[in-house]
Length: 192
Image (cartoon, rainbow, N blue to C red; front, side, top):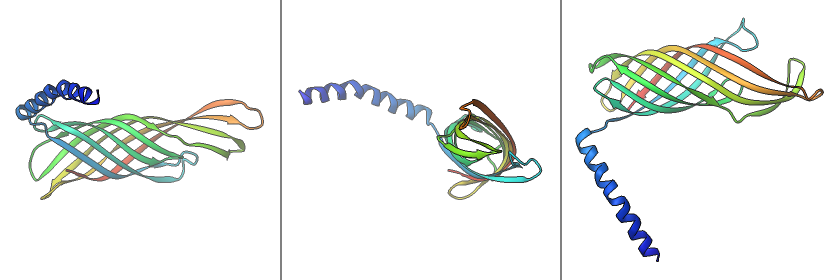
């Protein structure tokens, strides 16, 4: 019986594999991976008079659409007030194929968090159920072609909303706290 099921599955998926091979021969998809390390510069959430730099690591994997554009999906890790994991869609447009080329990029998505903390925060004892929030990141940069990969230098703007649900210990009162971060970004990356 096992062999019959295996035979059925292989016959069922065999035409799909051949069709995929035919599609790749005619369209020749080109894939890319863009990995960035960046600094997000702006005010601290509680003390607006102090500047802070938040490190960020993101990687995007996608396909080229046409000669100069690409789209992809990405993930990252960033330590705002708590650790967030952004998941996003990104689009890229490279101006030309020269050794040095300006490019534009835009990323949008949601930063998740699985952090629940018991904190004393501005005289409030309570549990913070951190939810994460929406992120938007347009950027402009320079792509420099190297022998085995491309290097990128970029700057941009980053909007990150973080939402927390707070339950106070003494009154069991629950409320939602929203913090919006508006950051200038500076990034170094590689594309391969």
